[in-house]
Length: 576
Ligand SMILES: Cc1cc2nc3c(=O)[nH]c(=O)nc-3n(C[C@H](O)[C@H](O)[C@H](O)COP(=O)(O)OP(=O)(O)OC[C@H]3O[C@@H](n4cnc5c(N)ncnc54)[C@H](O)[C@@H]3O)c2cc1C
Image (cartoon, rainbow, N blue to C red; front, top):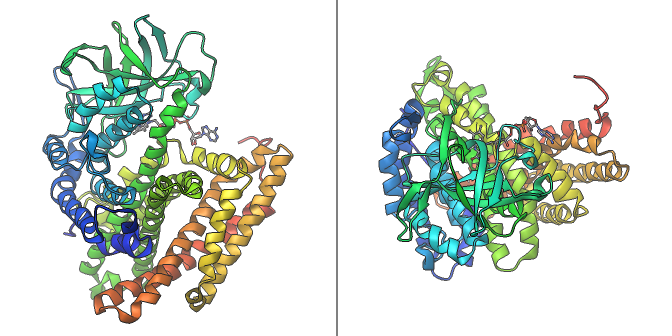
């Protein structure tokens, strides 16, 4: 049976050879940072990955006496996760954290989510909710909520979705009526709430979008409230039940260990909440959490693909047919090389993006804009392509992949949801084209293009003539598509732009990942001369990744560009 494995060599190459993230840190050296990641990887292997299959098989249950019960193995894993200080990674010391560059945090998160998506969602949502309180909450709210969330006594959630308000968050109907003492009565039903209730935490802290009396319609009328499941006493112990009831639990295709709950607020009595930030600024404050969650979704696609690839490579080296291991059969080799190029390519995109947080913190204004531009690409591209890699993993396993014995089909089931939640990939594509490109006049996209051209201008890139030329043509055609979009937008033909925005996001994903792999290949070819035998093999594989990616993925951009530029896009007058 294939064993859990993280390609730490590739993680370290991206972080320390390519991005040089160690330069952001004064307190830790490169070896300290590598040590953190290696230790976390061991922890993930022994404590988190080990409950992945049980989480899938046992799932969560809504019980009469204990509320929502998680798979038993999750309890120990959670204790270990918090006790070992992993929840605190990346937070400042004054709130009990262990500071680390964002990129180190992302690398650990990728290992974490890769090992067990369902389990990682409990603490992931808790961190997201806590970050909103830290960034937008008053000192009173920070003092009341942050310490117990850091300790792991309380877990957080994100409550936007309602039966009639999915992608259209502005259609939310939940209400918040002021009580005159600074608190509000919250009433409404939120659905599909991840970690909505569970016996992992003593209390669930919900961040809820709701509408105060007289508020305008749409997202501008929404405010954000913090609503605990149990009221909180002055000594921070649990008080009375606050009338937040889990009224249903969803049966799902995957992530069975994650509790997806329907929550009814104020169904049988008063449910009190406090405002976070200003009234009517709910959606802005919720976006603190949503932007992070979108990147975490991207990590979900990337990390599931990478782990599925590692297990599949081992399987293909062990399984024999026609007298040889299947890894030697041309079609299987093709699948494996494609899976590796895509998985490592997505990793390099995710880690590149994580480094932008650290550059932004240092005052790099372009990094902030690039981060905003790349967030929907990480979310949508890595989840679509990550799912596809997981499907390929099933194919390489043959019948054993379709059956549950090897735990491979679980990767595809657990990954699919990431294309849907945190704003479907269709919504991401609209955000990418309309807000992140057209709204800023294409400036940030152009600046990114200049970086791509600079890599192409590197003398080492010349050794891969066909691939580099393909990347250069892809860049030019992206500009033609954008000019075309600009023209359509000028004519107010927005539907013609929106109809192909998913294709264009996919196009740009291919382009940007090819560039990240080119950067890796350049660095690998420059380091190969003085490398040890083991390193030489690794560097050669980085060059192969770039070439394979161009041949199998970047080459698709010709067809996508042709479809966007040469064919009608506005099909609104045609009936489905
Ligand atoms: C397992 C799971 C966990 C979840 N966790 C949470 C959570 O913790 N908190 C939370 O608040 N929500 C959560 N959700 C809800 C999730 O975010 C929504 O399902 C998602 O936003 C889509 O909404 P919808 O399901 O109503 O689909 P719809 O909005 O009905 O979308 C259906 C289709 O129409 C498309 N579409 C809709 N509007 C447009 C548009 N304007 N332009 C183009 N295409 C469009 C979509 O892309 C999609 O393909 C979760 C959902 C699931 C299944």
